[in-house]
Image 1 (cartoon, rainbow, N blue to C red):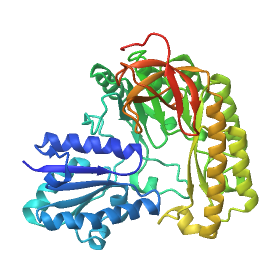
Image 2: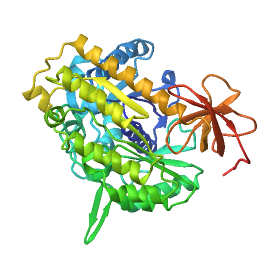
Image 3: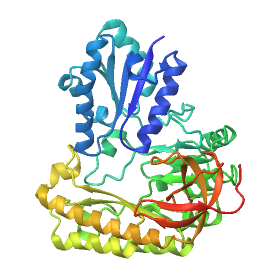
Image 4: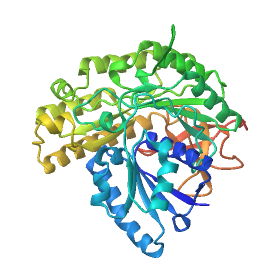
Length: 446
């Protein structure tokens, strides 16, 4: 029986896809290996969002050559966005890659693995689909803590932001049948999971239509939240242009829908936002922030930002810093602009900001965000939160960590608490990244 070892890089969607791949292969008799040394195949599920992500995969492939010298039967395959972007070119550039499979072709993996082994030839399958959602596949929860799980609700993206490769590597948007999503959430709850995260490149644009019935994202959130009041529900990622008051009303109504919204801003400059093809301006974005605060004053807001996009001026960089001061994000993913092949930016714009200038601007954003995050966390001191315990602290086995509804990590002394419990924790001190607390009151085993 062949053993397959899966490595995953990149976003949460990639990790969810790896769980689908594991399920498909297990149904065909493959075993999912827990150690690389015992594998017959290595599948690397890749990210192409930035050049650094692809270079990391290239480095990993060089490392795996040594493993192949010890095990000549070992075959390596590239899955996901990098496979879709480079396709068969990747097998020429990386001689130890035997097959590449795009994100819509995973059902063919068992056949391709057998073909590579039996015929000794390389294989590629990268055709994108307009219908594939893998809705009928029950994922195998890889490396699961048994507490939190991802549920993919849609695939693809058609926003065509100027800098982004996702529409070209994952195809157009298509939404999954809501009944299958709710059924998966209910199954996870029955298995003992306490939290689900609904995933999509732009969850706000989720839309399922069958006959006269239309289900949008707010209605889907309501249905999942009603699986159980003790099942926490999160989602990622929102696009500012589609963040509706209807969704905010649903979030405010249900206590088990976590009060945290990831709302990528990318830039504080209207000219930059238009050049990026983001379909909103800074006034619209700030209106959505105000709406979030109006419905849920305690909601945590996080973001993405790009430093040094094409032709960005110093004044426009300062506008981004000012946006951070106005919104006061709890966390941000902050990156230098990386030109990606075949995007609108690569075809029509000039990457004219020197790398050292991009670095300086990024460092200024990082420094400001660090200061804001610390100040935000300092305001949490003295507050008590319900925390879902996830596991041991990385620094000490005498401590546990979990997250509150706002997705903030809280560390506390473990006492007799176990992962999977809900506990009440009072915040007593903090860092910019972590809240430190102490248990208060009677704890729940639910």
